[in-house]
Structures are given as C-alpha cells and as structure tokens.
Amino acid sequence: LCAPAQILVVQRFGGKANLHVHLHAVVSDGVFALREGLGVTGKLQFIPAPEPSPAEIADLCERLRRSILRRVVRLGAVPGESAREMLSRSHGGFSLDASVCVAADDRPALERLIRYCLRPAISLKRLTYLPEAGLVRYRPPKTRPGEPAVLEWEAVEFLRCFSRIIAPPRLHLIRYAGALGPRHRLRPWITHAARQGVPYQDLLAGALRLPAVLSAVSNTVRKAVSAAARTWAACMRKVFEIDPVLCPSCGGQMRPVAVITDDRELDRILAHLSLPRDFPKTAPARSPPRATAEETQVDPRVELWEGVDEGPQSDWAAA
Image 1: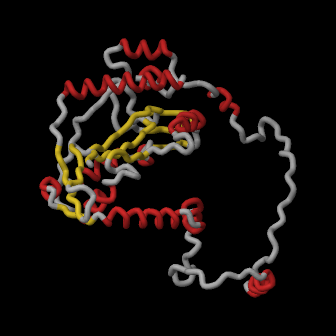
Image 2 (image 1 turned 30 degrees about the horizontal axis):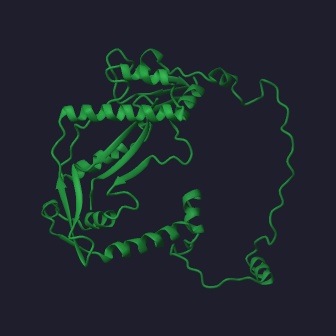
Image 3 (image 1 turned 90 degrees about the vertical axis):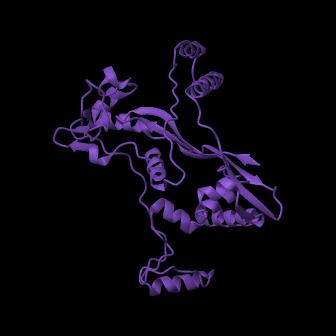
C-alpha cells in the first residue's frame, strides 16, 4: 500500500484582480508506504522519488493538455474547433511549473508556500476607494514593463470584475488527493506522524511503528467530529459567527441540564424573564414605492456592463 500525498488549491484570480483560473498543487516528492501489511503493527515509510527532468515536465504538461481538452469538448464547454486550434499552438494555453521545492525539515518555508497557495484574491492594503470620484484603485504586486503601476475602475465596473472571481456555489477550492484523500487508508498514519513531529530520517528508514487499531480509532473519531459539526450550535457559529452555548456572564461553556416540553412552564419562564411569549407578527408585504430617476439608488450605468468582458486595461490585461 503506497501513494503520494497531494493538496490541490484552485485559484480563480490573477495578480491584477482579474479572472484567471489556475491550480496550485503541493505534492510530496515521493510516496508513503505501509510495510508489513495491516497486521498487529505496521511501519510507515517514505520513499523519495528522483527529481523530474524538464523533458518529463514537458511531456506531462502535453498529456494534461490533451486530456483536459478532450474532456471539456466532451462536456460541451469548448467547441471542437477551438480545441484543435489550441492543440496546434506550441503551448496551447497550458503551462506547468515544478521549480519550487521545499526541504523536509524547512517547516517555515512549507508554511509560506501553503499561505501563498491560500492567499486571498486582493490585498486590502493595496486597495483604495475614492468616494468623491467613485473610483477604485489597486496596486498589483507585480507589473510588466509598460504596464501601469496602479489599476483604476469605476465602482460599478470593479464590482463586476470582482464578482467574476467569486467561485460558483458548492465548489470546493481546496482538495486533498493521494494518501491525504478523505478515505485513503494511509491518511490516519500520515496525519498521526505529522502531529507527533516524526523526524524525516525516521520516515526514510521506516522506523515508525503504528498500531493497526489506529485506523479504527481514527474512523470513530472522524465520525464523532462529523456528527458534532452538524449540530445546531456548530451551524450557528459558522453562519452567524456567534456561540450560542457560551455563557454571557462567566464565558464558560453551557451544557444542557433539562428539556422542557410543557408549554405552560415555558410561558412561566418567559414571563419571569420579561421576554415575549408569542412569535413576532410581521407586517404584510407592500409594493415598492414609486421613485423618480433622480431619487432611485440604482446606478443606470449598471446596464452598460451587462455582457461586457473588457478589463480596465484591455490591451494588456488579456495577456
């Protein structure tokens, strides 16, 4: 049983707050293997792989390009003529870079790499809003020769451009693959070794012995954590950013002591606390008030950007 470990991050933005979908992958330069089967004890070992050559990277990029284009054509996302035109190019819109390598014992460098993969679309320190002029200015971290150092949009145009970066609903932007996959049998061993801080040399020698019962324990813990994450308190914390079981007086964690099912007792307790005993009554819906063109808050310039795809500097932003 062996597999590499991989974390894949989908980024939908470029350095100029533009839509630019690309992937960042943090991949182990080798495979994790479990020796001596899944008996009473097992040995977790890391087997390093040789560094890929430029020819191997180019061959992998070409295979990925053809495989991805075949799939998007089959899904109807790209016409067949466009796919054939991209295949005729030298690169065809695909590139693969594998020049970044982090040593096994350099944890700060690994943290910087992962933080870079998980960075937000824009930096608020580089963003400026001029309300008197209705303009948004942004200083990109990197510029090419001849490009402006500061990008400028009207407020409505900036919202239109930024809304394209927002991911579609229910789309996971962080994915785990290989030995770190959610259901992979090596994941409990690897995460346990990471929490224990096992030295890299011990992983190379396969000196780490882990009980096979760890997998069953990990599955039990995973199910308990999953059930706790679906509780009403966890949902309130995630949606409204409040902790409903936190005591407002002492700050401690409250726990249930009784369940009241008698409505009369509930009315008595609410009356004692001076709280309303009935649900609030909402007013019926009414039609929106009529407003003149001068009084409306809707900017008529919004209609100008419907279906327009140019950026603030269309001559170089497309590049």
